[in-house]
Image (cartoon, rainbow, N blue to C red; front, side, top):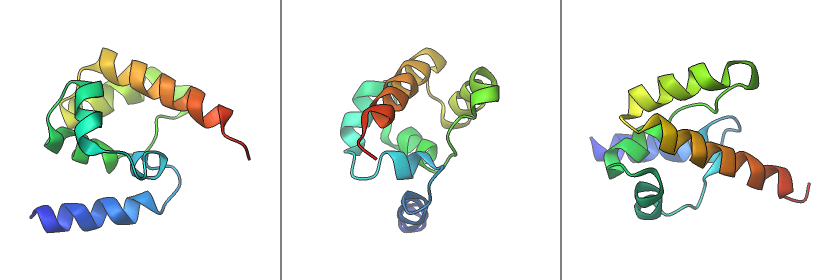
Length: 90
């Protein structure tokens, strides 16, 4: 089963709008520390789409429930990620 999940994450990393795309190349072990969750939870999260601006809080709650991640940790992490993506040269 892990093989299917790995392939799905690899495909999602090639598609903008997925967390796997935004975090491509990130170390899963480091993400577990930052989010305070298990590796399986991070892998589930990578398959999710990014929160939409007009539904940010609702999407955070849905993602956190789906991946079994603390909503506060996820919110802070995604805000940081959003800030970093704005700082990237185009």
